[in-house]
Length: 72
Image (cartoon, rainbow, N blue to C red; front, side):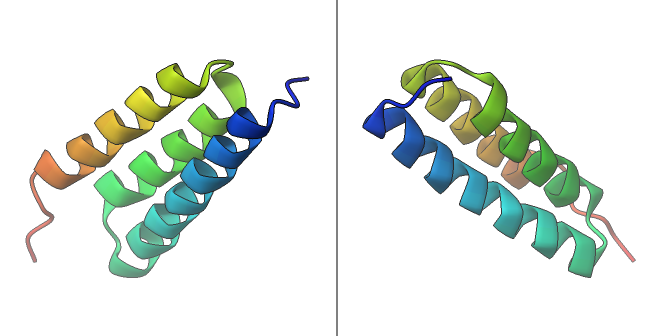
């Protein structure tokens, strides 16, 4: 269990952003945002390094932004 203050703060921030993406994806029925949010929440738990976790989460944010939007 990592109790480094930097790790805890980064995990809290990326987890909160992931929850935001997840809720947005659920309400808008956007699978890209829903999946990206779920992966961000998971990344905040499973990556032991702050830098690696931040890079993965920024990459997920870019992927959600660049993936084609659902057209109705």
